[in-house]
Length: 339
Image 1 (cartoon, rainbow, N blue to C red):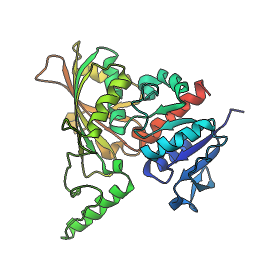
Image 2 (tube, rainbow, N blue to C red; image 1 turned 30 degrees about the vertical axis):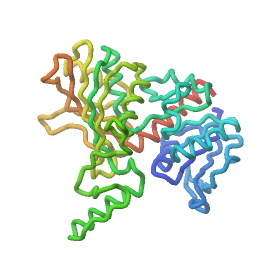
Image 3 (tube, one colour; image 1 turned 120 degrees about the vertical axis):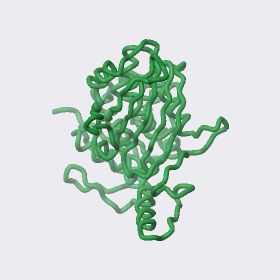
Image 4 (tube, rainbow, N blue to C red; image 1 turned 180 degrees about the horizontal axis):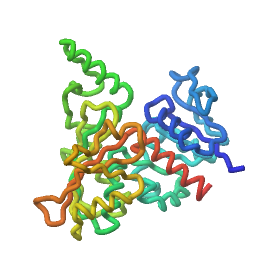
């Protein structure tokens, strides 16, 4: 009989926590006990896992006895407070927040890109999963990096409201109804109306004029690809889409990579699906990416302003591969090789 592992999901009531629950079952992860943890607001609720109703328990410092892997998706503060308790109890933490990503002793992992870095989990018994926008970007970047060093990246993101949680999904739905019925839209989650609008503002602005989200993409990409010298400029935009982030990438490499070559590289890289038939109006769209784990890449073309530049478009489900699935894939590597 295969070994089973006791798993805790911290923040199970949230959008990513719910997706973690689904992905564990879909991928038939070898779960022994599954412990569902959240705030007092969720106590008394249950979730179904493989036909069994499991009670949600309140998260405390004593929640992790006999847990092997603790999946955290409850924000920075809870990760910083409760990961140490999970580690003391003997668990390895796979964290989806920004709490540990840039800690030099904590591996930041996208399994298709830098799976060997999982071995560094013993440093602090924590493995960080990057932000969803970084995750979907680094797979096609790694496919190119395998052929030539990347010199420069300019990326613009078009991020779904689900990246802000269920309350933002609800706000877009309500605002859309209000406006379509001739009533003014009211905003609580975002500083402006999001329905039928675009906000070039995700997270707080910092002194250099970029936002924290944009700077995270810079730092996380360099760490995952193992190249601190890559020049990266990012613009992050919130768009009125429920699920699925899209990105426009411009990449400059040291050696020329043609569009045809890039398409071949993307086509064989694990986790990527090429959708690139502009003559037939085939290209990646968030509506197609939602609900699946593959990252869709298309509109692949050479940059007319650079001899060694490429443009392409990427779409992915931000809750699945952008967050939940990536954390489960990290956990699969842990149980297969290290636990």
